Image 1 (cartoon, rainbow, N blue to C red):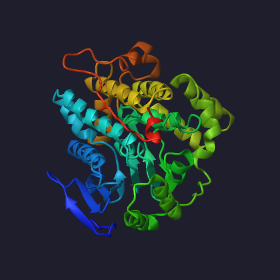
Image 2 (image 1 turned 90 degrees about the vertical axis):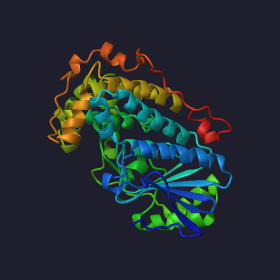
Image 3 (image 1 turned 180 degrees about the horizontal axis):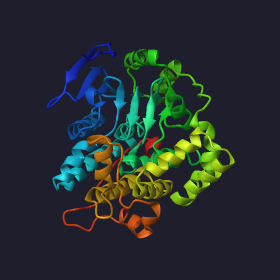
Image 4 (image 1 turned 120 degrees about the vertical axis):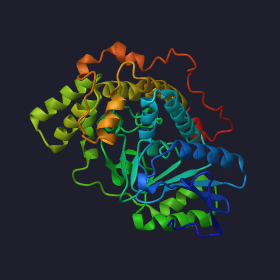
Length: 390
């Protein structure tokens, strides 16, 4: 059963055709609830379509001033429903997968350039598509049990949903580290590196939600002050990976994945510890092709606006699904999500077998009938924080 926190004149509305996305109305505030708790709120095509519809409608509606986004159950959102995409690819329908990502990336762009404040309450798991649905918004509230990750290289994909934009803007080369290794960050680390704008204790999240509904405003300064009233700067754990930023910058600033691994191994020769060992193991277990395209994607993202990043990532994800260079995405999903043997057989099997020309293929766009670049909606009358992302 879903418990309503926004109690001020609120009304819970169940949305057709499914109840995978719920909306709670409270005067000028709309609380959107991702409601697939058994699937950790993984985003289905229906959910993405509904979110896109709602965000468009609320932007046009003068009665709506603030969007709150949260997940039902123990996760905010564990990602996009890639299992459904893989089923389509296996049936020869990769273009259905392209339609899924086209809608998802358009939603990410709309959120990144939204004219009204979005407050995402990041309780529990925030991964992949869940990060895309929150990181582009104005306010991102982490808490005690938040877990952020972009684990795509482990399944033969790459950090998408605009991740090449927001990961590339983290301090130093922390974004490359997070994107290549799939490292999990807790709420304190999310706040320290800037992925979260605020940290609010778990027991105060519902009080924050009530306060936002009660204030009933769309003024970003007032919203920020309200969140500040409930938030504090959390202490990083003694062994937090964020304390390794100096080593991360030294190693992950290297030009190639091979050079990154070599630099980490040299650090390990000086003093091997659990963190270096885990980092090396994560890189060596990941898809070699994914690692190479992910590094280039994040590097290119440093110099691009959010729209350019999403257009490029759409080219990349279509090339991944088409599988002409590598079928690692299908194999990674088989090994980790379907058979769960956790033993993917990558092809190419080693970094040295992935040539620059093979990597280029992912960035060029497809030369097939009925395929075109992602067409993002034209945005106008944007606030300054949204313009700065373009």
